[in-house]
Image 1 (cartoon, rainbow, N blue to C red):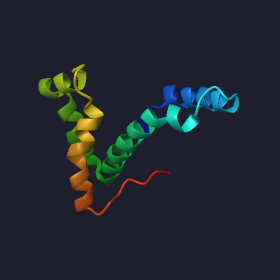
Image 2: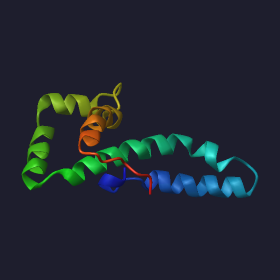
Image 3: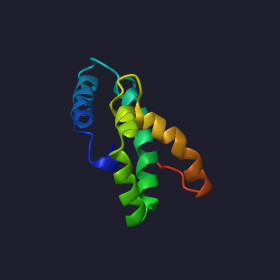
Image 4: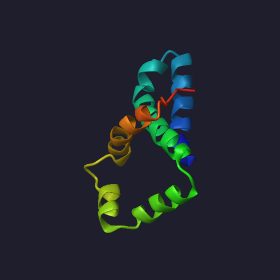
Amino acid sequence: MPGFGFGQFESMMTGIYAAQDLCGLGNYANLTRPFRSSYRHSLVLRRTLELLDNSQLDSLVSLVNHDITQKILNNKHLNPLKLATRLLRPWLKLHKITPKLS
């Protein structure tokens, strides 16, 4: 998730996948497909965070301390990143902002 500075695992794996592709042991595009989906989701979250001012960010941080938010974030059957981006995409479209792959 580029918005939070995560991605170390994906960075290491893409290096390994590139080496495998060079050695003829795999296809880089196929091996990295799951990472691209996660990356697109993280870009939606990042673009949303960029629109928030300090007071809105403070509200967001205080929301994380609620029990229901913790249950959602810690639920093993939910992907909070996917859930958040599905909820945030319409809001970004309203602001005419599209997450661009860079």
